[in-house]
Length: 249
Ligand code: OAD
Image (cartoon, rainbow, N blue to C red):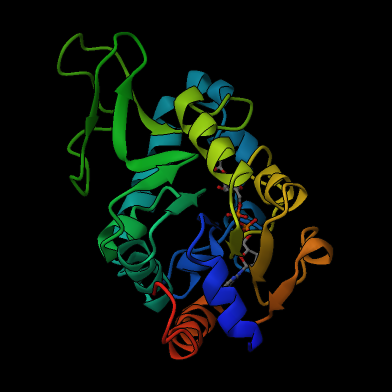
């Protein structure tokens, strides 16, 4: 049996994918830490913390409003589309993303575990109001709650905040039972997301990293593909399909 047909057999078990900003890089969405990365030009402490929001909600909203406009002009790339195909074809598939851009859903992924929330949702800082809001630009900054007039905030996770409990539990459970885990386009330095592939590996998963650059996860990976995701992921998936005539794919 060839290595890729062995992998195709493993793909009939639980498959988990963890994505980061790199998966959207070829769509034109800036990453955070690489060259041109957001945290190279902006200080996260000024823009992406609860303290920053309490100090200057309008400034924080201007940053998120700019990111919403930027992402609204971006389209899913072949990596997002391949992941949507994998969801349709594989019997047990979980897509976990650290991205807030919504491009996985735009590519057709139906079930996305959004670890860090979404740019396209708002929630009230005073009452329990939470809603999707896709207006670009927003008519008023900072936006106000239609229910109680409280300040709305982006429904994203900021530095120093806990991840939504249910979402995190779903991610841990999926990583803990994965037979294959693919890690695509993340620097693997932000916790707890960075621990998910380590957990999967410790429980026996076959770990694949797709990233043009080395990361702290690279030494633990069973396979490393050092190419941009938009090229590497469709090519990898095609290769699996070619070698899996008798498998479940
Ligand atoms: P980073 O900006 O830290 O890392 C992006 C990774 O993508 C790097 O390892 C790049 O080498 C890789 N990369 C760049 N172009 C790529 C391409 N075309 N294909 C594949 N990989 C590519 O982004 P994340 O790891 O997602 O959190 O960052 C994690 C979290 O830190 C984000 O969710 C965000 C940020 O602060 C919050 O905002 C809470």
